[in-house]
Amino acid sequence: MKDKDMKHIVELIQETIRAWHQEAETRPEDYIVVTDEIRRIRPLNEHREDLEKVIRELVLTNTEMWHEEDKVRSMDDEVVLKAIRNINPLNQHRNDLIEEIDEIVIDEQRKGDEA
Image (cartoon, rainbow, N blue to C red; front, side, top):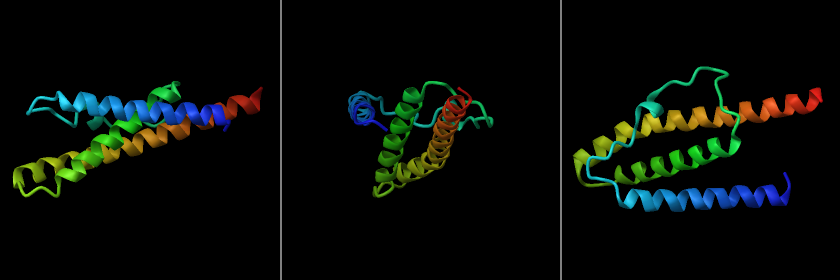
């Protein structure tokens, strides 16, 4: 990977985390962390072509999950239970995104080999 590409990815990650924190500050008390999109099981070989978009979603999912994991250390049982219920689907979504990134990269390698 070229230094220029790596720098772009690092900037993308930093901006995504910064945007997550800004958005999280304005969330209502009843904000739903795990959405239907996160709960959906992605069929094999269903992936997007936009690697940058998938990386951004992975960074957001990781950030969301890390903050939910922090809540598990709370003394409030209700907060802990809600966080625990959010962690598993977030982790599965994270794994799906990593597989999606792998598939995009493999597809690009195949295209390069065919050219």
